[in-house]
Length: 114
Length: 115
Image 1 (cartoon, rainbow over the protein chains, first blue to last red):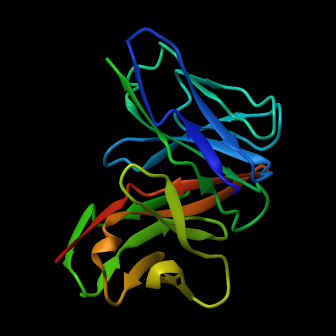
Image 2 (image 1 turned 120 degrees about the vertical axis):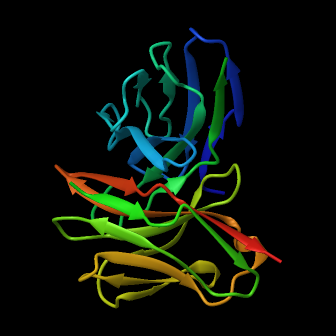
């Protein structure tokens, strides 16, 4: 079955710790994305990557970092510099080309920082 | 810059009643529009998309949407809803800039179907 996996589904961390969220896809998509979802605010783009070894900041990149060393993997690190890290994080992928480029979403990781 | 406004944050409706979820967009370039659905604690699933051609677009689960260029709207409709349609619905516009494709999402509309 092709798709996107995110692990773990729930993650708990203490304030001041960095944490890495996993995202893997076996759809052979070139582009991958990370979104943050907060109640009443929809999805906000954190980072995106069109090809391996390249990525761009989205609208709310501060306090986050990513890497894209392999086509199928796009891990997101939430650093201690992120002021409000508690949120639902969604990873997505797409072919990355042209009009109507549909994004496919993973099941999400809910991060709670206390 | 492109943006999306979903006019209702919550829409309560009784089972088997019709429903319309409203979406307005702003864009200075060609528009590609999407509706996604999110069930509780899950990722998003594509319902339908408009690229060009017929302004009435049919999607999965009996949903359809109408693109109206003069009113810059892309409202989602279903003639008869089921309890299982209870979910959050997101309208999105595609932004293509410098060779990069991005989706810009609205804040979402929570549809609550009551028996």
